[in-house]
Image (tube, rainbow, N blue to C red):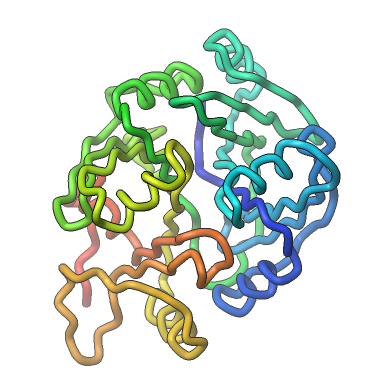
Length: 288
């Protein structure tokens, strides 16, 4: 029922500042400004690649304000995906116990995982003019202690085929996980991760925030340009320590720290690289 990862929502008290950071860092362009009554929030929508980033500022006492108080900082509020059959998806989600509100042509879905609210926004599929230095978003990562229960619930809510899912593990970063691929031929998915080493970054984040969205991932043909721009600004980033750096060759992937984007960690990988850990390493294009 889901086709692509098309957006991420960030709860913030400074949409103007966050938008400027995304513009400077990734060439994001503002495409609209409106409000979401259901969330009691003002919304500034940025386009970067073919994806969009919705910056949500509280407009009174509502769920965005409550989550900013609860979390104490800007953070990934919701994950966005597209669907070709939104009415069937909504019916399926509500039958699975999800809360639902329709507004402005989008469906806002709320579920509970391990006692924490988890938000999704579903939009109709459409063609958009890309902007900035990213090509497209393909992943939003959710942390959960009971990985199996979270994966099963998300699959049930969104009618996902578990035969497409891929399991992953990283001793380096200290986690096990599942990629809930929407289709076997596309990278789009929610990633559900369980930290296994609480001394590492992801484990420390989970200990503080519990079940919650952690980061997003995008593909880009300009990984090197993004890295240089971030370094020029003194923004925090991490290179893949497994990657052998060669003079004259740009990195294959980087992670921009939450401080670099005012509230969200973003992984950026070169075209096709993510298939290396997504079940089809033969699809990774060789570097020239």
